[in-house]
Image 1 (cartoon, rainbow, N blue to C red):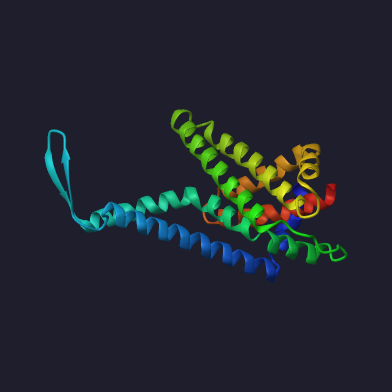
Image 2: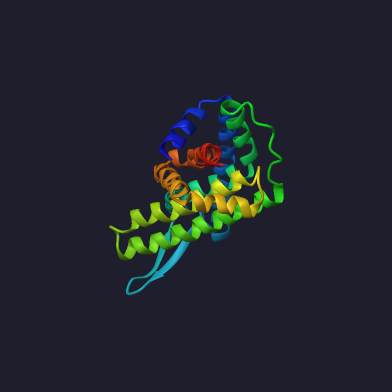
Length: 226
């Protein structure tokens, strides 16, 4: 598992991989910025607000203050959402990532049929939904039992990433049932790979590249065990 991640780190130096990374990062930042700007407009952020506080009465809040508070909240939420949203776009660009890895490290391979775009989109949306649900659950655990939360975050995301990335990469060269059987036969390796990627994902900003690293490492794991 560690060998697969180290090989994937080497692949990140490839110009083809950086092209995919730039597209995914740009799409991620654009989606988050657009979503928070739209939400701020819908909530009336930036205009003067009046709040009625218990025992105090009406309190006026200037638009500049609400704008700053919303910007800080958006930054905090972005730290939570960046990696899952980046995973969504890397899922859409999965064929580009795997093709770049195979061209660099497995040049003798025949071209893969690939994964149909609709299936790829469904897998990406499924992973996004599962990661958001897992992280929301982890946030609740953090509020109730803070020492347990980091371990739960790593374990849940590691399991999801290892499972989804390995099977999606395998689907390019085998049917769904065979991909699932192969992943189950090497579940510990897939889980370890996912944990390694989840650790990278927990680092602010660096987490944007974690999904790219995960797909590249899953490609190496697949070819090692297939």
